[in-house]
Length: 399
Image 1 (cartoon, rainbow, N blue to C red):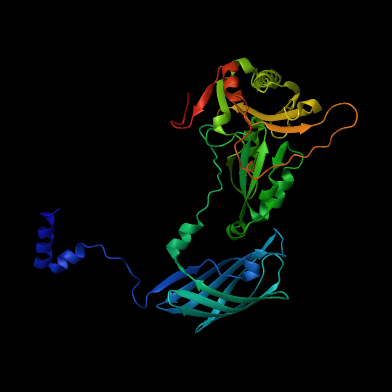
Image 2: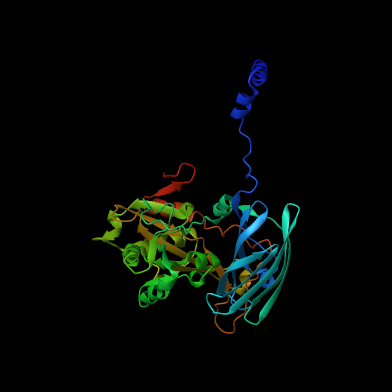
């Protein structure tokens, strides 16, 4: 390094123009150049619940054009969104415009005063939607370059149309991205199908309103999921369909040879349910009390009963519930199956004869968000019963 410094100094003294030409100086917008800048927040709109994008076209420090895009709750406290987009007239620091909201078709009037304050900007004025008037007083607003804005807009709906296996996505969970004007017909087509629709995915977000596309989250029996995805892809307005993340956690999943657990090309669910129930009855030290397959999701719900250790003289009963899911280990034909089980959910009740003691399940602050209930090595015991493999998260391979 010491030998290099004199060489650099000599180069600069001999040919300063060449030396500075080689240096990477920060690029700045040339004075008077046209550029696009964005504000992604204007405080206070709709009690702070509005999603705002103000796009400005500037020449030097002067604003030559502006577009205000506001997405907001259609009614106070509502999950339903409405939106308006207005081209604003620019007169010095005054921004004004009129438009109509997209959903409820309400008249919108914008009157804003824009004021630079050092490196930030201040907005004051009014926005009127229908009969509702919102006073705008917003300070310390920073703007973004177009690249910064676009980088922040990237989103991933998690849809994987053709996964190589079910280690990154879940075999029962899939998503369908559909254009907003086709979403209702798509949802109606699901009536009567053995599939569950995620209720939260029915709410149209601001991102969906702006993109014109909505992602519907669905759950189905893994044996039917591929056919439902193929059907969705063929429907009008569907942009993408494929598997997504779901209930399967790899640390609670095993993989095993399928031959012994199939009848022809179908999974022998009765045999698998019996084997799982037998293993869990031992590890949970409980009696099997029921098994039930969910026709929509393909999940197996298992229930076990055992004496509660809480105040033994009362003879209380613990009910232990575990959910399981079995599927091929990848889409299409496979000679291996994978089995996932949930952590046990334990409730306690008085199930004795005669009058019952009413109990409430109280949760303390320490318990909330804590570790799941101990299942006494149930996953490892199932791996032995099914002669299966566990997932090595460090190496991302089955072991």
